[in-house]
Length: 486
Picture 1 (tube, rainbow, N blue to C red):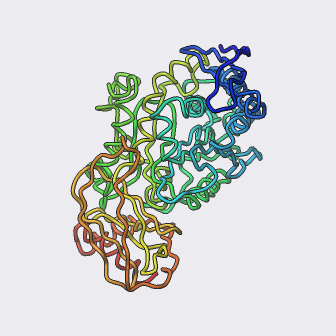
Picture 2 (cartoon, rainbow, N blue to C red):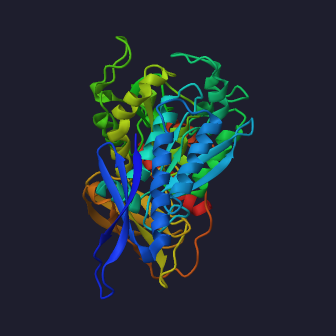
């Protein structure tokens, strides 16, 4: 608990106006005391400071370790935004089938809009309405971030150099429909239309014949409108960090029981970052004697095949690396366990966000310094089936582990630019390596381009069966064809 007291005392001030009385506000919290002061001539500043700190007290006091239903969750997010208007931005990305808002709280030095050079990160929870731990620990993550800003130097630098989007619930209808908490299966897993949202996205391996739900479409639009670089999707029912691909075919090695992406090494690193910073996930013991996960991680396909999943969609069509975090053996555990879940995940949640600063970033511009959108920028040997392109500001972000890489920048119709770079681990400095590309012959914007929402890897499999080239050759061929015929 916290308590506040106001007391006055005189304190000398610098300058030639002589001593001024000052009013001190003392805030007592567990772990220490904070103070704010203002001179009599700055009553408005004092009032602002007092209100801000009292808001902090109110927000912290209001967030108990319990389950927050729709009205309480919305009220909490609005209270946080009101208390920290310059650090947060609250908006709804759409509505559920029953009309509930899909709230997202954005945190950072520039919360309302993307700033060049600052990567975008997101956490999404409660996609299955009866998997509830993620929903609550994201609320506590919000509380920790806003109350630690300008108090904790690591959190301050993280928020100054990252734009963090937090969606506590993607399936509010399913959560509200779960009347009796259960450790296993309930109908609350699905949305109001009875659809599993984690089987509802376009799939890169087979045609997903489902009706796209309002919640799914809202997230797809959100991904399209932001430049997300890294993400995690919080679930329950197991204790493991699972990574792309969830689906697969022979083009990605599925015949060997593992569906490998071109960035498999990065995904393994991301999954281990979370599991090794979690209180026990890294042990890999699973939830029963039948299933173990070495190092607390698994390739999604190796665990079980999943069609229409959100993490594969992010990677293929969103240019965003996403992993799935299974945080509790019991899907909907008793509320008195939530504090322990927060303690177990706190360090891992923060360390994972830092990984958005892996690799390399920069801008692609023309001879006049104007940004070139839709330029293809990829690391050689890592071609994506849907080539990674620059955003409207000409920016690119590539998550890469430390090492030497050749970065290839391509504007359709012009000669590619190759650059050999040495990448170090800059996550502790909160900034990836920066390298810009300039095309001196280009003086126009590159035409808009997007990959079709079709089973791109299925098409590669057919090509492989016909001519038996290597996966690398196939992907390069697809990239060239997309550039020529866009």
